[in-house]
Length: 237
Image 1 (cartoon, helix red, strand yellow):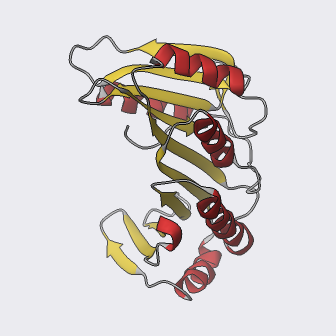
Image 2: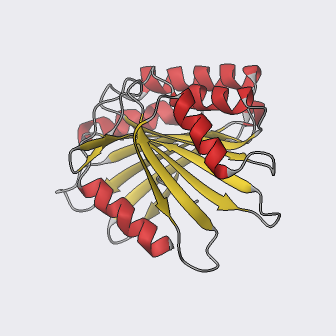
């Protein structure tokens, strides 16, 4: 199943027509609000920003990040990576940075920043918004591509069909598609795709716009776990 998912993601990356996303739009706030209003707990969340940068800007980027963080450097045959992480963990939030410099000049350098946490409330949201504004003002431009991921746990009261229906109604999800997992003993039950016209960051599959993905899995108690991603899940789930 993991191979199928990875191949599907690769296919989507090759056929994606991504619109520039303003750093101010916030799918994490929207999804976390839906989850908390449904009396469910946010187990973990993560927002990843990615943007290609010029070689001329690399030193400035590293200098800006280095003011409050210490970089480690890794080198292999293909790329040189600068890695840093904010270890303050304010409010349980971690901010990490990665500057990727390919050896092959045909590929541009890339700046990646990740903000993540394992709970959600008004205080954490305020810290997150502050960190996001810093990233938007100091490091990224309007060409940044943002990927949001949030995980929550269901119970025996509402099954996955009920959750997905509620999610689709709440966000006015259009162009819905559900992929069922038929592989025996796989933990992935289904993957839901759709399009929310409010969220500007999207990709296109055969002319159809998509910008949300929900993976449904089961834990040992057979309670569903929901991993929600926009515009698509970029990590394993």
